Structures are given as structure tokens and as C-alpha cells.
Length: 211
Image 1 (cartoon, one colour):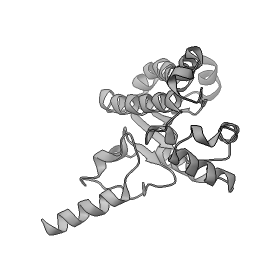
Image 2 (image 1 turned 135 degrees about the vertical axis):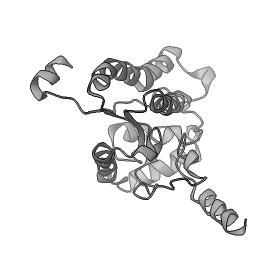
Image 3 (image 1 turned 90 degrees about the vertical axis):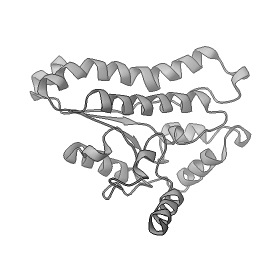
């Protein structure tokens, strides 16, 4: 970090992107060391990096942290327990940090099913070891994958605008209308461990109209 500061003079953003899938299968058949490694890389490594940079951000009284959560945090995925648990932990930790340090900015981003080496590795796993959501993600990936530019655009927008109303939230580059978030809407609390459920938003709007 000191070398980066010497070269740039200031650090404004930390983006934690690295992750692994980890062991796949039922728990009793998994290698515990591989499970532990998944938690280390996907959750504890970002925590470590955030801890290192926090004193600098606090001294500057500014800074943005973006944690790439992936779809693993949005719903249970059988046979991907290690990956899902690590990403859920990262999202919940992001939410906690936003409350602990309200003058800074913390966001979780779900980039979508992009054609990456990790997703290509998952595609080789037997289909009886993956759940419905993972199958859908693999289907999108095999047909070109989600546009990585959408994720890049979202991350750039968060770094540039630092929207307070989304501080601590989990935002999907593919599914969420983040440019027009439901401020003061009953659905906003659901931008947490999963993306906004559009059907839920519709139902809430109908309740508002009829109440």
C-alpha cells in the first residue's frame, strides 16, 4: 500500500474481486482444507485488505470499498456451500461496515454470470451437483455470458457518485435498476443478501395503492 501511495499520492477505492469456487458436492464428501481455503480467499482476504486500508480512509475522511459478491450470496445453491457461505459472509460484513463507518462507502456488487475461467471450471461439474440458479447462470455463460461492461459501469458509477442510499447494499449489475433506487420504499431493505425481487416490488406497490 505504501508503494501505491508513493506512486499515486492517494488511494480512493478498494475493489475486492478475487475469488474461487472451492470444493463442490455434499458436505460429508468435501475436503475440509479446501472448504477452509475458500473461506480464506473469498471472505477473510477481503476483510484483511479492508482492515489494512481503513486507517488511511479514516484519515482522509473518504474512501469506497466494493466487494464482488457473485450470485452465490443471493440464494442457496446446493453443492456450492463453501462458495455461497463465503459470499454471504462478505455481503453481511459489507452491510455491517456501512453502519460502523457511515462517513465511508461500502457496496457489494453481483456482476452476473460472466465468461471467466472460474465459470468455465464450474461448467465441467456434473449437472447433478448444481442447483437451478447455477444451471441458469451456466446457461447464460455458455451463450456468451453477461456483459462485463455492465459490471464495470456499475462499479465506476458507485466510485464516482458514492450514493448514500445504497451504502451497504448488494447491487446486481444485471438485474437492479440502481440508477433509480426505491428510496424510502419498503423494498429498499431487501437490497441486502439478495437482489431486488421484482415481483415483491410489484406486490408492495399494489399494497401501497390499495392501502
